[in-house]
Length: 215
Image 1 (cartoon, rainbow, N blue to C red):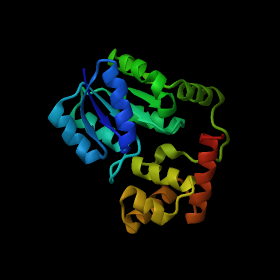
Image 2: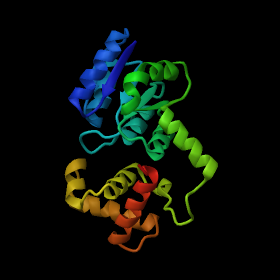
Image 3: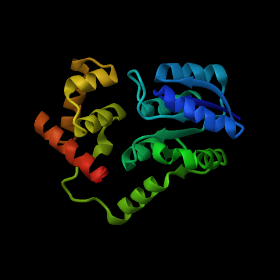
């Protein structure tokens, strides 16, 4: 079975390749950014793509999943990410991924995740499943919580980075986007979440990150 690995860290790709090949899989291609990923998938015709959320370049993992599913509708996609929050997992599944495994659990669960996804079933890491279950049982924390589902994948990514303490210029560098584009996204975030100014955006983002990852 042929697999493509899409991750921006060479060490992660190397380690994952080793695990996969030891278990009889063939890694037919690798990519560290979205544009390269689409070309690699087109050239190698894999049976599964393993995708990280954070990639180099201007295309993030969720946008890439949507692009891959549009062009290669039958390609199963498994997300492997550092982020153990429910929103990225939910957005990945909504975009077309068939599974979400955290990197913290990947060494023990990646083969099970692949087998589950390839059998046509949905796979979620245990930590993600528990959080999603708790979220639906308990409901929203309070009525003042911002509705991040209104944000586009790029706006959501910027909102999340703001909540993690990134400054405007740091976000610009990390996402390979100019300052004006970042500002445009911030205005959209402000309007969609009904916030007054940049200060309120940052405060709301920090509160959201704390609620999403309380520890």
